Image (cartoon, rainbow, N blue to C red):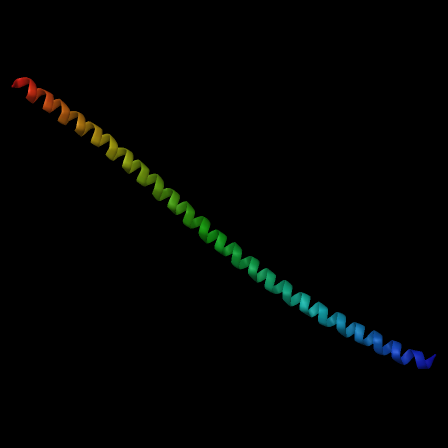
Length: 90
């Protein structure tokens, strides 16, 4: 029995050491994964803020373009009316 106990204890010891190493590796992989997730979340938040900013700028630019188009139509109508009046006088 004692002859078997020695090798069994050595195998058990190696198994425990192996499990400890595996646990350590898994814990460091988990820590790296958590850091990666935090970095991705930060990037997501940064891009979301940038997207919202671009959306606001686009809305303002669209409003300005609509205003310019309206002013252009009004000016074109005035020019056409003036041209008709001028051609009618001749």
